[in-house]
Image 1 (cartoon, rainbow, N blue to C red):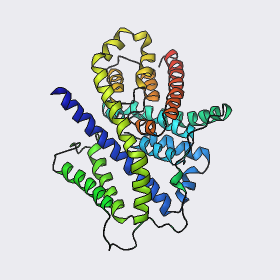
Image 2 (image 1 turned 180 degrees about the horizontal axis):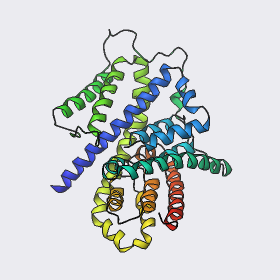
Image 3 (image 1 turned 90 degrees about the horizontal axis):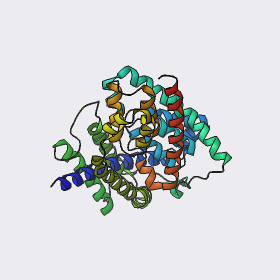
Image 4 (image 1 turned 180 degrees about the vertical axis):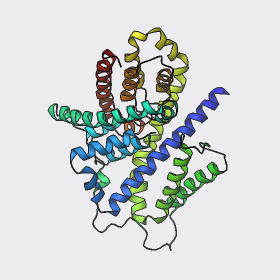
Length: 342
């Protein structure tokens, strides 16, 4: 019974995360086609602009900014360093908890992570060029046709079966959530999952309805759904399932208390786990004065909540290299501050 409940909980959480990623991908792709690639030039701009944008999105509370960064990276709009810097800047869902428990220190932490994200992005790109690190190729479908119009010129005309199915899916998500049958139910700015789910599902309904048949078939169905979304769901589901099964066997708080001299390294290693939950223990221990700020910062640098999960579905190699960079940077910065007494 307990195992069944766990599977259902992980499945539901995976669906929510996949919806967030899918809609962000749709939005970015749609506006890129609508503006005939001008959005791509605005974001790509200079590298510094990419570093600022990705670090800003990463430092915003929650994982949505990280999901957007992953979408930018998959579409080839930001560099390897920029996506790594964005992951350094993010604190995942713990950001909301920190804002409630210690708002002043939380804002200072977010500011430090934002600056570190920019600096680290520049440094990582520099290293990547030196060692000739080649990122995975961007999605090939992003070649734009000059005459391509992503929206329907008339609301008349029948819907294809695939369009009806996708429209019905998002409509069912909205209705079931409003009725309290499925999905996050807290309507609270501190836990905005329900607000985001309803908002993004509404956007998805709009995009599915107004998309031209050509755009819907080639961009949404053949590209996003068939090549990306199912991978995002599977990676998310099995990663969360592993974390939920494995963590009950580790009493993290007891381990940390018994190894206070090694707690900074523990914080960094636990930050590798692609999940928001494990990092929460360091948030609570900092709030209680058990650990210093340097340990919280180290854990925040290395961990990225659920933000990395969609990237694993795109490139395991790129994801692991980013994790390695962030682990090294997190331990280095944390050690310096720890020995300075912070």
